[in-house]
Length: 103
Image (cartoon, rainbow, N blue to C red; front, top):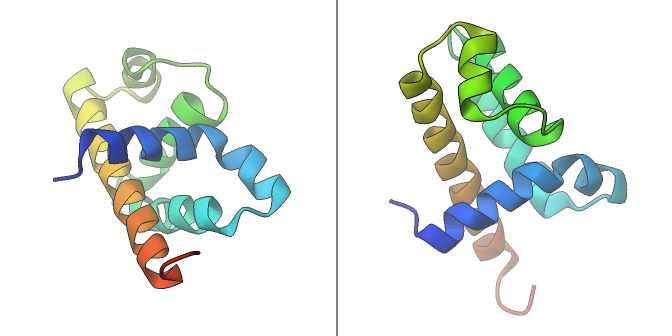
């Protein structure tokens, strides 16, 4: 299970993704895009990606708003959010380890 600070870093990366993509921050872009690819593979992948768009990129909806917009329960959307945050956190940590000490 990811540590709380790692999950906060993951949320920050998701919120920052559009700007990170424009400035070429490969660490954030690679982490977020790898999770988006994984989410897209689910049978409800389009809804999961829509959650990321609404909650993190556009910042127009809460999780409850996403649940209403996608016609899924709040519990399901919260589970997706946890999976996404955990995935981004793991991808960020993996990326840091691959870079090695001193970045």
